[in-house]
Length: 118
Length: 93
Image 1 (tube, chains in turn red, brown):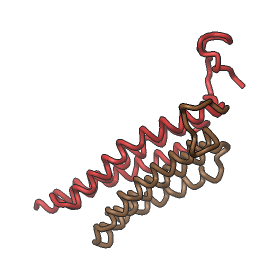
Image 2: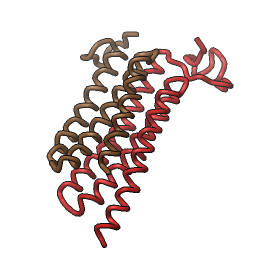
Image 3: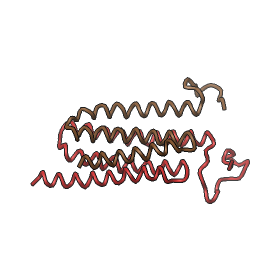
Image 4: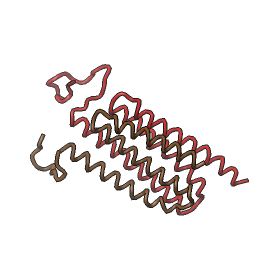
């Protein structure tokens, strides 16, 4: 009985995780420019990985394997923001500009003099 | 159950590889490569469960750290054109 419940819970988590993983990568292909693509990828790294790891933890039970899985999840949660920040900063430094419908940045010669449309 | 997850992860890796091939800028390719690294760790864990050998999780942890360090090194190279760049010295660009 307990095994059946664990199987059902684990199925639900793994289906959800697979769904969010594919959705995030679909956004990576479909989004129009770099910064929206970064936003789409973060879905994979938080919800997708989180649900997949939770499903595997339910299957593994309380053991060393689930501890290692939690370490992998903690690694994702710490490294993904670092990577996103570094990537966005480098892209802005290399004059990759976000696609804006309305430009609210201060005009030329203002304090943020770098913010010009190419 | 884990077969479903493995198939979904393979599809996701294919989509990320598509973006890595198409990507107009270098940063799109970096983003896609980083996503492939993340998905590869998850796929390693799932394959470990699929074959009943959870030792693959250690490989996944190591690969996660290597992914972070490698991506940061490549980004530093693109930003400064030099891996031994010293932020205290004169800015180059």
